[in-house]
Length: 89
Picture 1 (cartoon, helix red, strand yellow):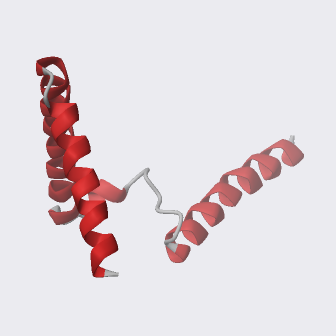
Picture 2 (cartoon, rainbow, N blue to C red):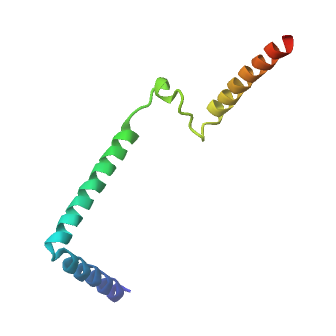
Picture 3 (cartoon, rainbow, N blue to C red):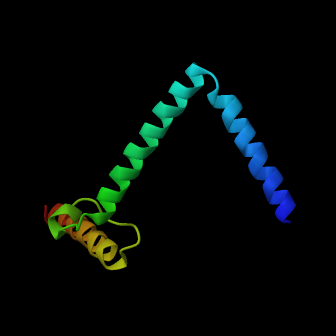
């Protein structure tokens, strides 16, 4: 098993060196690495941000059952009110 791991690591190393031997490929790898770093930093900042209740308004979380129930009840209230007004006329 250890011998297989060494062969796999050696293969990955050789593939990496052969890929990065070209200046064009090095530039592509650098740009890709910077893009990944930016996306990971953005994701980490988003995870650290404590959302206030005002941030949540209008953006219901699909896994927040209580909030979804409240939203669905609110939607039914407006429909019921509209139907009641229409029936009175």
